[in-house]
Every structure is written in structure tokens, then in C-alpha cells.
Length: 422
Image: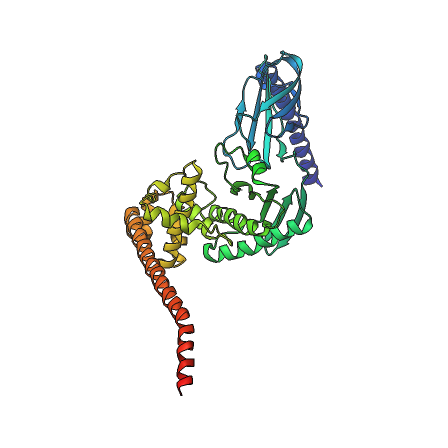
């Protein structure tokens, strides 16, 4: 029985030691708090009501904050989805006090925010005693609320499709979704890119409405825009007799940009415009019929744009830009015919390494950009000569047929005269 009693005394002793240690620790912690500077505490309490916006005009952010010391500084932060850096609005004007209420309108006239972008925002509040608080993140969905949108959603294979449109019945939205799903499959047979899990298509009633939303600063001829970082495309298509054709032209073009974005590692700006836009133009299910004519005319008039120039963003002028698009499509078509679809994937893989426009061509083709430009132009000239020969042959054939047709009645008369003599 003795061992048990001895163990009980040891346990009691250790319990007393633990209690004493805990008490001492509590005293020390209290002492540290009492001698610490006030900045280690914070009496700032922040409330953030929902933000409001007038599309294209301003976003109004609200804040309510209280503190045990006078609030002296308030900063607003927000980040548009797809952007790496947050926008900072420092030192917002207000009347310092123990309680502040702020209603701040951020102008969108000079600071364009893309339509339908989710925006994350938060506040930081400081008081004169060194107190500080950061609000929780809030989310604002910046939809174009100038219109009443209709919506359909449908999952096909691994993609959650969404189509939003303004004018037209349900068949209009369904037609757009059908074109998009079929086009994605066709385009990706060549690209073999990861497919986004969600793709949203917004269809404005006409191009002018789209331009108003995008504020394109001069690209007043554009019919669509891709926002790969949002998994969205925006197009302007009227609900009329040519709507299906416009869907087959615009939607595959913008979908190509989304897939290229996924293919190269979700980084914008790596692929040269001549390849990106050329591939997108070539993938249109109903391409612009004037495209070949533009290239032919430029070839005959010695106005073709050097391929090196098309490594930079396309010109703002509509006519020059249309030639740039048409020419880029012709170059990519030449590459596809000459080397096969694998060369497109190889070029995209090269540019995913963030190398220069010329270096990508050299790595894949074994020749520089100038050599590619020259070989493409030579092929164009050869095709042009073949077309000229064909046209000339058609003229002579037409003349021969006309001669035959004119001679037929005369042959008939001669035959009748011969029969009479018999």
C-alpha cells in the first residue's frame, strides 16, 4: 500500500508546481501587455456595406468605422479579377473622429473596368494611437446593368456554358450556344489545349452597344472581345436574318483566344498578334469573304505589311487593321498547309517560354521571320500567277464557246441546204 501513497504525494506536488507556474505566466503576460505600446492593440472596428455602381460612370464604396482613438487615415483597395496588382486609393478625404462614415465614388471615366468582371475590394483604417484594422474582402460583380439580360446555362462534356443576350427569344441564345460548343470542339482538335470549366458568352444587341461597353479607344470597328482571364467573350450580334452567320464568324474567333490563353499557360501577351489573330481568323466558321481579296490587292500593289511589323499590336486604323487580320490569317494558313497542324502547337509551345517573335519562328521552323515572310510571299505570287493563267484560260474558253454558239445556226442552215440538193 505504501507505493500507492508515495505516488499520490508526488502527484499532488506536481499539481501545485503546475498551478504556481500558470499563475506566474499569467502575471508575466499581464505585465507585458501593460508595458507594450498602444499600437499593439486595436480598438478599430470596421463595417463595409455593399458597394454600388453606375456602369461606365463610377463605383461607390461605403465604409463605417469606429475606434477608441481618432481615426486619421483610410485607404481603399480593389483588384479586378485577372489583374495581379490591386488599385490603391490612398488618403481618402474625410473628417477625422472616433466614428467615420464614408461614401466614396471612384470614377470609371478615366479608369476603365472590363464589363462582367468580379472586383474584390477592402479597406484599411488607421487611428492616431497606432490602431489599425483591415476589413474583410468583399466581392462586387460588375455586370452591365444598363440592359435586361436573358440567360441560359448548359453543361456539355466538361464545360459549363452560359449565354446571356438582350434581344431575341430563347432560340437566339440556344443557337449561339450550339455554335460555341461545336466550334470549341473543332478548334481544339488542332490546339489540344486545356478546356476552361466555365465559359460565358455575352451578346450585345449590336456592335455599337458592345463598343460602348468596352470603351475601345478607337477600335470602333471591332465586333467582339475575349476576356480569357474571366473565361468570357463579348460580341455584338443583332437579332436579324444574318445573326447565325455573325455567330459563326465572331464566336469561334473569340473562343480561339480563350484556348490559346489556356494553351500557353494563362499568360497574356506572349503570342505574337500575327499568330494569335491569324489563327483566330482562320478558325471562323464563316470567314470574311473579302479577306483573300484584301491580300491579293495588297500583293499586286506592293502594300503587304512586313511580318515583323505584325509582331506588334495591330494598327488602330480600320483599313490597315483589316489588312493585318487578313494577312495574318493567310500566313497561318500557309503554315498549316506547308507543315501541318503540329507546327501551330509547336509555335505556341515556343512562345509559352516567353521568347521573342523572331526566336519562336527560328526555333520551330529553323529559319527567321524574314525568311518565313519571303516564302509566304513567294507562295502568294505563285498562287496569283496560277489564278491569272486560269482567268486568262477562262476568257479564251468563253470566246471559244461563244464562237461555237454563233456558228451553230450557220451550220444548221448549211445542213438544210445540203439536204435540198440531195
